[in-house]
Length: 230
Image (cartoon, rainbow, N blue to C red; front, side, top):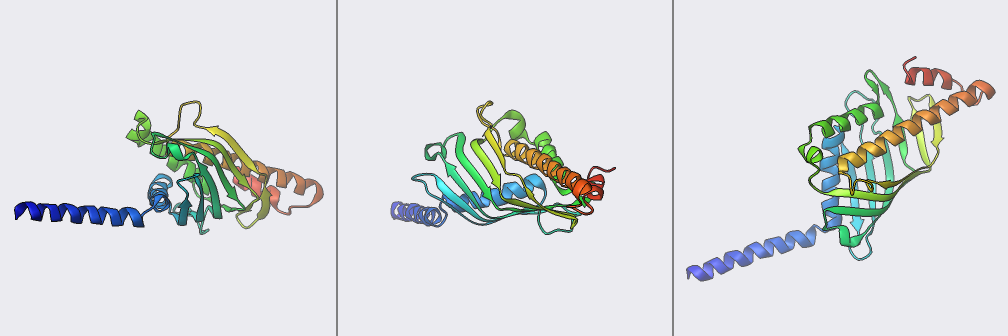
């Protein structure tokens, strides 16, 4: 009788496990990981409406991606994208180093806002750096690592403090994490934020230069002085 009871318990556990797996495919697990880890990393809310990834060819989409703003900023988000396209090398999903052939963020809306402690992307960058400085996983190089062959942001629109509304030149980063044999998610995030931050500042500076010559961007010069703290 005890043996029968034990077998029933095992079957029940296996049944629950099977239900969990069937109702939590790879995309759903990735969604949970992005939201929980991302929010902890940047100290602001990260949301994804849904994630769909094919385990056969590695193609997937992140739908309704929102990178929130840290405390102290008025705008509702730092970056928002309807879709993010990804291509993962399927055989690497279960390995220590996951290879993403492509990550494409198309037509995101970016709010670049100045606060008391710098702009929102400066604060996000500092939060990531603080995480890297205290994370045992990152210091010891343990855990999952990532290599991204091509990371692209295209057709982005940037609003700076309701002063400038401009198109951001396309950004492409190649071979992220490749030299070191893989980078941690936090290291990858830092590399992307640093690049994005620099490109936005450059775009605003160029808009200011055009405005000062041809009167195209009224008030842009004042905005850049405010951005650079001058």
